[in-house]
Length: 155
Image (cartoon, rainbow, N blue to C red):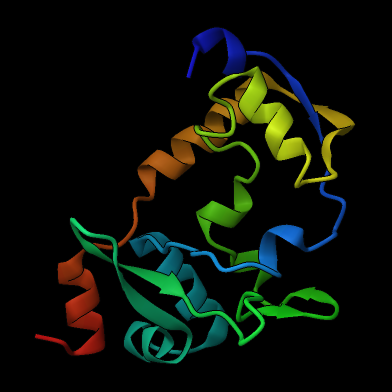
């Protein structure tokens, strides 16, 4: 990622199309903070939230925690009216499309705009806000195998 590319303002406004929440397999990685927020929002203990709404995912070098998907690959929390946990949604969801690999270069940004109709539309998002999103993702890494094992009683 070049500093010049992510240090400029970009136009973005969520089109509420739910494309990033539905229709294709994917993972919504949860950090410790995400798990705490979602647990509190749903009124469940962290362990019960993880057992009900999450799955451990072996990504090769580690096992992390992801939200489950419905049989059609929609996010477990996506409803006809939108996200059921919107106020407590994970950092991965809050910061989209301002992810490092999307902001890597002009081609990546343009490619993502083919999937997301909000990219390039709406109000200008300041470079400061974009950098804050990148830092938020970095500060909220996915849970580790130790956290997952402890939560799911795998030890």
